[in-house]
Length: 445
Image (tube, rainbow, N blue to C red; front, side):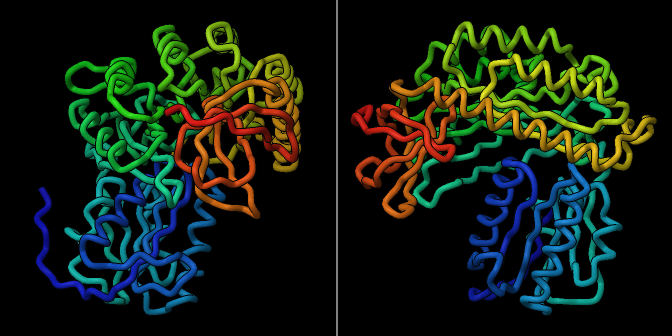
């Protein structure tokens, strides 16, 4: 076990933190920030001059790595004497590249990101960079992480799982985060209760592969959901993302039956072609996927469904892309997250022949984004005159406040502080500029 180093920290030191990548990364950055606060630092905005900058990185795409290099240089322009720490997935997989970025002082891998104050005994700028990166096989720790999207503590992202045992041919996450592991259910419930006590009304359960949750006592995600919905209080739970092969009949049933579970699923598809799914080494067919969506819609007709899709994977011909488009066109989903395939080192996909030209990848991305906009409008329109539960946020944007329904429709109405951070009954009356407008019918209290 790491032993803490003894040192003094000036109470007027400042730190700025910047996150690249997924909501899981954001929740982990929040925990890192809390550690700096406990050591007497003041957290400032990334665009402000700070004594220390911490970058929590992503490596899912080449653009994420490029952005990391850009933001490090931007921080050094703000303060050339700042101490620069780079951590996260990019740091875990390619620390030597980060060391080549002039001005970086410390590179911390996935295991080390929560041990900054045990590994660094001061934050004085030097020419020497230090690297603390554990081998992938040693990535077995679980760092607690909870973050908020809102200053008024409306929605919390709660990390309950980390790592992944899947072997998708395009993905570096198992290399960057190690094997699947989960927070123990007893600790999870205690932390969940604290989140409720802190005033959060929506808790998003997050992780690398949340559906693969399993603790040492044999509890799975369904067991956790059954325990959490029994906790007293005004709150709702949203599952961040879940693999299609892990959306069980039991999970669909409990989401359908419990008012404390959001009627919203985000289910990665990646491709609507069985040939491409096999090359991706995914664990299902398009027929399996369609069956899952059908079951959800049968049990929860108004369920919101988000889908991840990758375009331009090697060997994705025009014909195979059309298969994906046609498959999605007939599916009753709400929105797409479309990703352009990016070659990642140390993945099987990089050795697959028949690369798709970059311009073709971009065109396919735009095609699916247009489909997503149409599907989203269709879904929003179908909800006109429906009654929904909305959690409104505190931001007053020119007299308008916004929030999300249980099934993830973005709504807007006249600002009224009485309804901020409360689960509110709301009737949708019309759609305008990708927002659902309507009227408040009162709170659920």
